[in-house]
Length: 108
Image 1: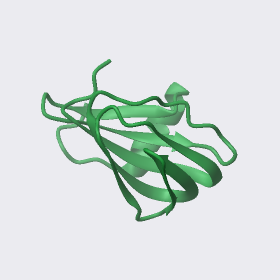
Image 2 (image 1 turned 60 degrees about the horizontal axis):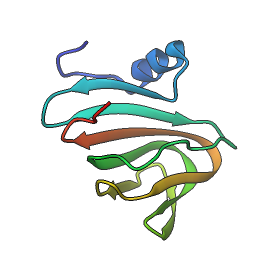
Image 3 (image 1 turned 90 degrees about the vertical axis):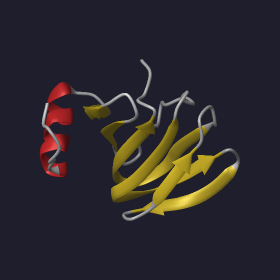
């Protein structure tokens, strides 16, 4: 695992090679981070987490519902989701590439 400098394209390639939607690339006790990719027309399978989350949309276009609030998200969108809050990306019209930060580190 890298020590602190990352390239989003390389992280996306590593995620794709593993065949998973989410690839964690950083883990410390206080936080973890990963890249999450959902294809156009795809379904977001995630459930509420025990940690606070911050999403940064790198590329793509979709909608997101967080605790009943519904918004369009696209490149440059930043979304905060508190621990245990229901949330989901949907109506994904362009492949969504998202950086995800958990604090503290995501529990397994």
